[in-house]
Length: 301
Image (tube, rainbow, N blue to C red; front, side, top):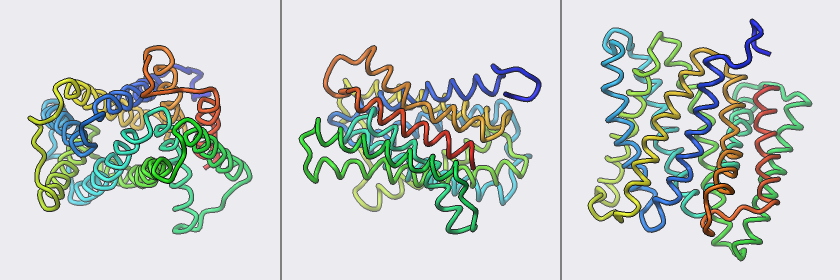
């Protein structure tokens, strides 16, 4: 129960909105990367982020007055770790195995964050924490089994599962960096603008150095609207998520956001009629167990 007795506070509603937006983004990425690459998807999504968040930061605040050197460093690092690297792995995972499988595996983010805290900070694992971690592993094991059963198995199919796992690890590091930035008194939109611009610049530099900048004119015209929609959904998620963190404790916001895999499966069942997002009862059970574990890790952390 939230202090004061109100359950549906603004922060709770923002977190729930963020989970729904995240689910919509995952499905949009799936349909926008049938022939397009995950790198092209990330460029489009980052472009939408920048075009919306940077003007909004200046329109609703004064970035120059609230940014400090430490805040810029923290948000830039958060952008590199989560917005660039984490999203790159996540989008590739969605392209390879589908959003209904990638999203619950990515939701193991609290497990990775907890393991890092145990190794680096020496934090103690409680019984509730341990049970929740086992639930995450069990849920991912069910999803892995079901993916192999419905996708024909083989090493090539299982390699795709590594991408959302890697995404979960990097997404697990990002909140700590963002928290440092917000601790400097930086406004939400300003922090998001710095995070997004740093990630976009670094990713474009990486592409230019390794393979050349992508030509978005070659993206399939049927897929481009899906990628733009993913960018809009991701921007709405960021605003909802960080707005909720500003109003409510992390232990309340994160479990709500981790419910996004269940929203993905619900949307897939209701609106997706092809085999791009084949949802079975085993997959639904695995996702539910993994999400329950992610919520437990957060609550017992």
